[in-house]
Length: 238
Length: 396
Figure 1 (cartoon, rainbow over the protein chains, first blue to last red):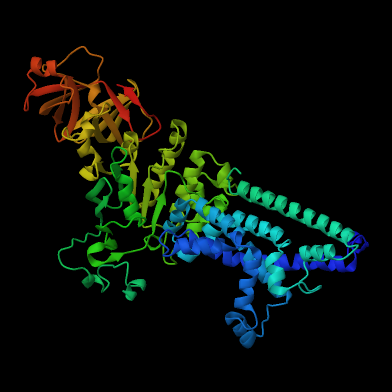
Figure 2 (cartoon, chains in turn purple, red):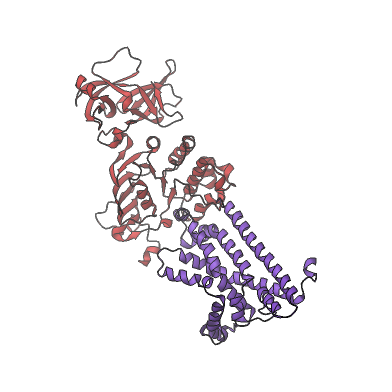
């Protein structure tokens, strides 16, 4: 480990929360991005039946109270929920009270963020380029992979990085769905919350809040930078 | 329907698949046959033409007349309500039989007005995109050959963003050629370029046209491109085909809108008949006639096409003498067609089997009694060279 990581300006418990937050956010993005790309692609199909309904559904986590989202997840994916029971019986996957569950709840919450960024990218792809690929002999899947995807890559990356930064701080849905278990589900915001609940926890809360702030700003800057770089590479002026 | 996905199409005559053609549909091995019908809001396309292949067919007409729509339907990028497109014995579209080959399997290389190079690929990546997807059995020019012909070797590692408009179109042309197309489609490839860039790209188009013997369907609204590239001209207006045929033939028909243009004139296919170094003249022979032009460095027998503008042809009823004009041809008045303005008329003049056009005033028609059958002398003041290095009119 690098020297600065081994210094003791954060306690082992605090480091654990930071590491867990990074893990959860990373897993949520890794799981959520492909699904979000697919949803965004569906939403740009002009003749898709029920598109407004899908559109509203995708945006639900953005407008509903996070606690409600967490509660709904608990109802559906809880051990006795319709989907949760199947996952548990067939695959032995338990989401409630686990790190995987925290990542899942975070993915659901940041889903609209990625979809919106990717969808804008899909809409800015020049259909003329896809037509050109057709005349050069590229079938539907071929042109999607070799033309469309590279052109939406800046949007995907920017969306994923923004979702990662936002995912570091997901609170309501996580605490409702998977509770607040140190080392398992206690991410940065949950640790900050816990610290404010105990006497003398102010210093911990302040240190973790600072880490949280730095990570969020770094994430946003990185997203902007990556999008710019890639767009410039593609000849678009950002 | 599933069998359509297999090897049954494109249908080829004489390979046992010939029976697939219902009686009555003409199939010609050396014709590009297009007939299309499609209704847009406020615009209806109903166009049909046949043109010989290989050769360059130019769709010519004003903006919005539907020529690009025809091209899109041939490419498979637009599905017309009704239509049939056949290239020789290969049927690309036949709505009557429910056959519409998807664009990706038509093997029509397209050069778009806006290039449409893939911005995420290098020039080389763009060039190889179609090559990689060409059917295994397809033959065509190789990568090195196309790169050399189009002079794009130094650009291979560059990205499309850094290229000039002319360079982009050359790369786009190379990309289309390398996809091993059976038909090359060009949709106003020079329209977005300024005069200098256009002059830079045109010679490359001519080279491609001459070198590969590939059927080309070319859309433009610029007459100089017609003169330089067209074998067959398809004249379009308002969604229909007004006339189609060899350029030389259509250029002298006074009933077509071509004859009303300021730059109207007869296109003559000539061969170099001889040089007179002493007098500084070159003799050009056209069917049933000969003209002299200022000496040109061309081999004997070389074919070239010239345009004799109607405005550059005067008419005399007695044989003129003592003139600087070198080309005075005996002719017979064919038709006298008044122009819409009423002050001028277009004469067609028969010189043996060839025809010239002359633009004269209404007064001249009356004064000289210019009527069909009247023998006259045609005075040709200038001849434009549409092929070769020098453009514009050259006094003779």
